[in-house]
Length: 142
Ligand code: RB5
Image 1 (cartoon, rainbow, N blue to C red):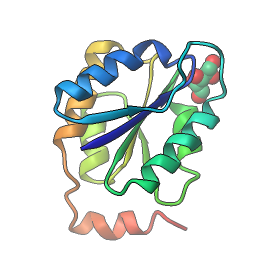
Image 2 (image 1 turned 60 degrees about the vertical axis):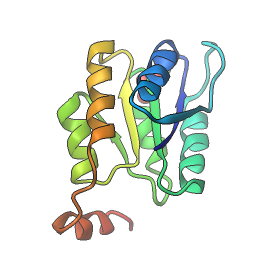
Image 3 (image 1 turned 90 degrees about the vertical axis):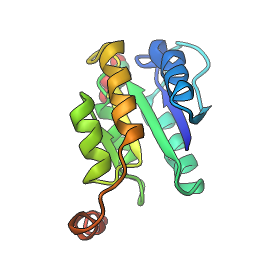
């Protein structure tokens, strides 16, 4: 599976660890930046990543900021992006199983590396269940 990742300065510190976990899970991940911990505006990276995910059918995105809130708000402005702010393995699993989420957001200031690892594992191991959830997901787009 192909993943893209982007952060702001408040999510930068975990970026390399997240990339390693995704690679160890057997996936390919492309880093869309930033390349340093200098202060940046999270919407710039949320929009960049959302466009990459939409252009690469079947791919997933990972967005990290301080809380994950700003990234998810900005990414969800894109038609076709379903960005889920996840706090643990359960929310990550359900975001995939019931919501067919294609962008995972979390906050570096909210969850530690152990929880981040469990989030990434749950996300990558869970497929969309379809069925009754398909019509609900279809109704998300205005
Ligand atoms: C940056 O200080 C912080 O506001 C940002 O990373 C994010 O948490 C916004 O939602």
